[in-house]
Structures are given as structure tokens and as C-alpha cells.
Length: 86
Image 1 (spheres, one colour):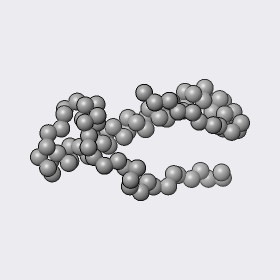
Image 2 (cartoon, helix red, strand yellow):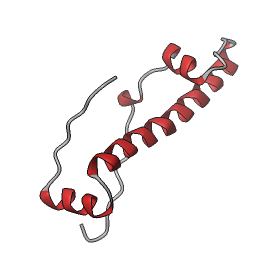
Image 3 (cartoon, helix red, strand yellow):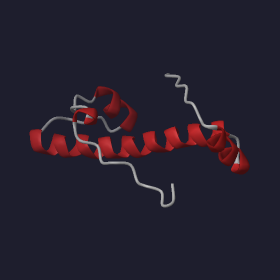
């Protein structure tokens, strides 16, 4: 398990606190993005297996841990969305 530390401005902390505990927002964001990434990567594993004839574990967690797909960090990442007025 990894631990990350982030810094929020006073304004960011205040607005996140208005709706919920900021830790809730941050952990929810990371968990949600990780779940989306698991689905994306599992689909890529299946597509790769169909092309190459390799076997993919039926269990998604096992497939992700056994993956040898190249890291997306080496590919271009789209720019984050902009927030009007910010």
C-alpha cells in the first residue's frame, strides 16, 4: 500500500470541507480513478491476449498484478480539463 501527501491551499481546503471532509474527497478520487484504470487495463489485457494467444487470469486483480503491458506513463497523457473562471 502506498501513502501520498498532498498540499491544499486554504481555499481548496475550505471548499472541500464545505461539502465533506477533504480526506474523504481525496481518497474517493484516488480509489475511483484506480477502479476505472483496473477496468481499462483488464480490457487491454484481454485484447492483447486475443491478438497474441496468451492466457489472461479470469480474476481481474490477478490479471492486473501479472500484467506486462507497457506503462501508460510512457505515453502522452491528455491535458486535464479546465474549469471555467478559474
